[in-house]
Length: 456
Ligand SMILES: Nc1ncnc2c1ncn2[C@@H]1O[C@H](COP(=O)(O)OP(=O)(O)O)[C@@H](O)[C@H]1O
Ligand SMILES: [Mg+2]
Image: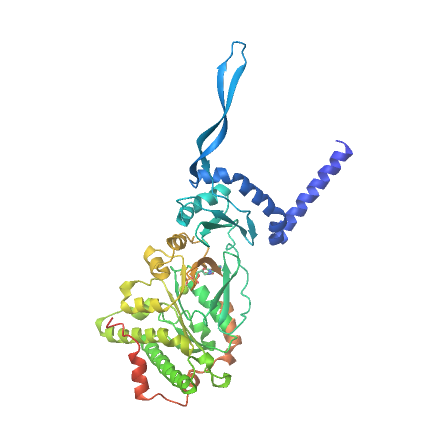
């Protein structure tokens, strides 16, 4: 081997190692500078074949310059006739230039006549396989256009540590598949339903909330009818914990009373909600974590019927008015079905935050995600058991995302709870913090404005 070949080989090996190291240590910049241009070119180059294979093309009449083989002349020379002809050709949807995103790329297409975005959603899986990438999501910013958002690798296989929370009642609990933060913000979305089978990551999310909210000036309340196994470790930071039905009922009564008192406070100050009150008058926000929601509605025997109806009404009232008066619900559950009674359905309607972890039965996914895009349901059912913490998250704007929570062990949440014990407001202080008590007329008017689920 000559010297130059050796040097060439050396340079090649060095640059390959350099690229590998770059990819390993700073994937985002590697993706942008090195990988994306190649990917963009290959996507554009393969678009005709891919569109054909995914049935996204249409036949169109075009003038085409063709060559028709003519007769073989006696001399042996083939005489070819050339002519313009109108023939049917396969046209592909027009594709703009792909733009890089953090975990993939995005491209706008012009739909062909007769196509709707659903045609593209139906073909999303085929597209992903054709390009050998993790997933393709389809959206339509305006009629006649669809945007394909491609994710090259699943960004949710590994998510790092819980960052500290930026604002009051806001916790970054994980990462969205787009690469953005998954934020639970009680001030914009006051109540949540968090569904999932056992071992799907529901408690992990509750742990993340406990860890994120512990340093903040908020009161945490736990409802844990599974004997308190989930929330007892966090009791140093909990202002109240209900582990039996009667305890929960009493706490809910307190919460309804608290709302009434806060309503009177707001009315007196001419405020529509506690956030419009001056800082020194504003009562502390209360976040209620419910571990197994169904337990609150399940009847062991007939004698519990009235108590359950009472609990269900109180919980619904908290959900209906809590937002204005700083009381927020986070309800976890394995099964959130209509079979649990009308109270659950009414409560569900009040919880605009929907989180669906891996579920066993399609019904729970349907109940949790409601009337979202069917693709969201399909995606929820496709969550593998190997990735606990992955969930479909619906936001208020009707958009849905795949997301994964940060791993927060029970020990980490417990540590946060004990570290911030001194920030725990006592329940007596919260409940008795108001000097004005509502009059009977106030109470009647307030309660009348809320429909009773039992009469619905
Ligand atoms: N985001 C996550 N990342 C990694 N592991 C997780 C995550 N969420 C949950 N896990 C793991 O999955 C297991 C089950 O989670 P858990 O929250 O207890 O489920 P559930 O409450 O739904 O039964 C736990 O052992 C936890 O270690
Ligand atoms: Mg659990």
